[in-house]
Length: 191
Image (cartoon, rainbow, N blue to C red; front, side):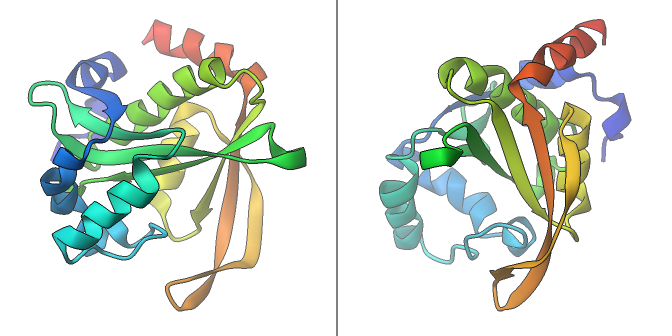
């Protein structure tokens, strides 16, 4: 397995890109969405049937305002997903980030680059957005490291705040403000 420290962001970025899902992605979606290690920290349960995956893609993904496939550039195949859920009312200034990636691509800088790409786009596409937030199970060290690499700040822990797959868990709160984004671009330009 590649050392995550050796993966230069520009090298990873040349290997992946983000695009909208289509129903024809269902087979590739099933490759990683049917893996218990991938769904372990996701709000959805492991997919066990293609029909359920198609229903999810149809009802949730295709109509979502920002739900993207993380794709390999050389073959256009989705190896994960990343989304930003818009908030409403008094919370419309923020969006909630979520990501899932095939286990085969963990520790290669792929998730970090996908989050960086979303952060680079979302504040432009949604000019009302001032804050991008992520809630992460405190046992999900990999996702917390990804967010920190991109510049998200860990604001604290919401203790016993979420009932998830039959258990109540602690959630770490991470955020990145629009005003902090230019600093991150400068840092990546120096790499």
